[in-house]
Length: 239
Image 1 (spheres, rainbow, N blue to C red):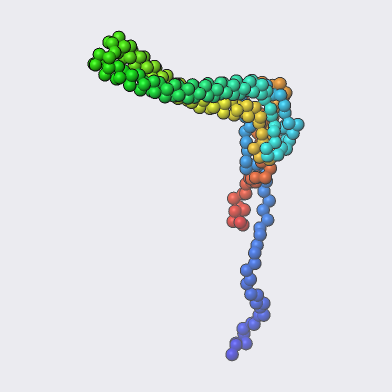
Image 2 (image 1 turned 30 degrees about the vertical axis):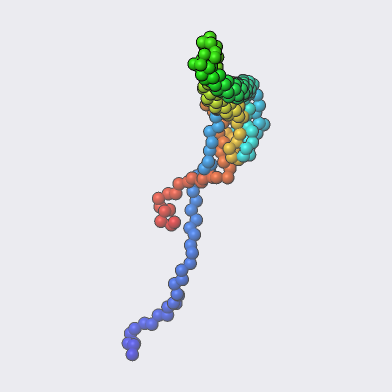
């Protein structure tokens, strides 16, 4: 039994319960673009066109043409390269056609050599029996030698043409590469937006001469953003 001197105090019992808690912390910071592009001229030349929205603070869309550089010199260079390529291809066709004719002439020369050989052999047999003179035999031999020289010349011409064809095919590959380079240079006279966003640091004017590598502005993505702020040390314990 409890002693009469003890005091009994009523208490309220509360069960502990786990609840989510979200502390409220006030801080200041800045919103930055997580994706930026420094737009530069890849070829030199005067500016002949600017998109109206390509100015500091303007917004542009992916693939939108922003700047156009005078393309005339690059178009002329491409036209010249294409003309040189066409000339090289035409020369190759000519060499190929000539080779075809030389092969046909060589085939005929082979036939003539065989005929001359048979004629010389007949005259040699007849000369042994005295039925033809030595002069006839000499003439038959002379004809054989001439036909052999003609055949040799045809074979040499074929070798020369084959060498020219190889050289011309190499020339065509070179000219094709130059055409590709000129095509890319012409394409670089146009500057497009690589992604959608806002424009900054633009200080351009029509007619302004750009050098290769000159900056034309910066593009900041409006879809990939970063928020940067600082939290005081005493607030870290509440996170």
